[in-house]
Image (tube, rainbow, N blue to C red; front, side, top):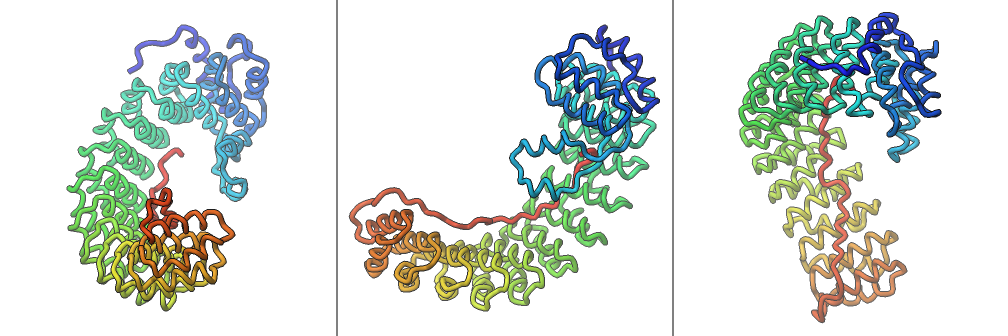
Length: 504
């Protein structure tokens, strides 16, 4: 319960109900808010525009100011109830662009719609302290849009005073407000919200139950484990998916039996999230069920299952993961994940399947690269012939990874192949550098001629590595630091599906 109100904002907030009911411009005269800089005034004036897109963009712009912005807080609060749907505003796109993201990504992104009230909520969240009390007061607004967007803003304001009022809002008469309150409580991460969110798992509306499950995962409190396991039987697949994600986040072994049973869910996205959760929990009780699920009809589920088995590192999984490569599975991402998992297991039983992926070869370059990495992780001579053969792969990344793996094996039978990489030479400098490193690891004088060829290489990093390797071969000293390039670009693809939180 909010017990204090700022005298500055009381008369201004009296207009909020009027403005919210209209769902348009603030019902507060601009001159009533005090002195504004010219830039602030320009954007504040646009809050009164007839066009909803202009109002939304202006609210977004006001949230970007660091100084002197407190006087516009009542205007933004008064705009919370404006739920007019609009396309994403240019201000939001510029914010993303300011984070040095790819322009191609910006162009291709499917931007979600927004509203003036939603942009006002985001602006209040960025303004911080001066916005907390007025936004708390708006939770009592007459219009659902005011209450919903006030909850949205409070989730971003990160102030503990909001927790109890938001817990109360979980009982709001409007489901849209309840769902947003659940999301806000998840963002605040305060354990005082746990009991209220557990009760919300039984809400009549799907969006509220899903939001509560997400929030409980964010709070990471073991009190929620049993109720969330119960939500794995929810009538709605999106709630079951979110509950599985939350159980993976909480990481409590009591969830394992329920998650294992849920691997039979009818919805593929739920099974995928269950597999992720079981991988996170790393409980070997799940291994038999996960092995059986490697034949799931959905490729995204099989991929996640392979990842989970790699996380568990139980050698019982080697045969099943090997079949993914030798059957082979029809999906390259599944095969890649299985190769990674076999590398994590470090079990010799996985070598034949990994070697086959290199010597067949697998049509997917990522699978071959991951197989080479896995053979290097296992580190047994049984994988050597396939790795030597992979030095002639058509893809430079695979050849580089094979050279790294041969360095890990430190076996003299690899010398001839590695020397040929330097003497031929391989067209890729990274491959040549990795071969020099591997020869230095093997420490055999038989590599001398190849390393001398490396001293004449056109690439400075290859020459540096050859110097280091020759020093190790001749045992004349350290020869400088060992840069160990270790080229593996993606040792853990981890396809964590992570459902989208509410109100994002």
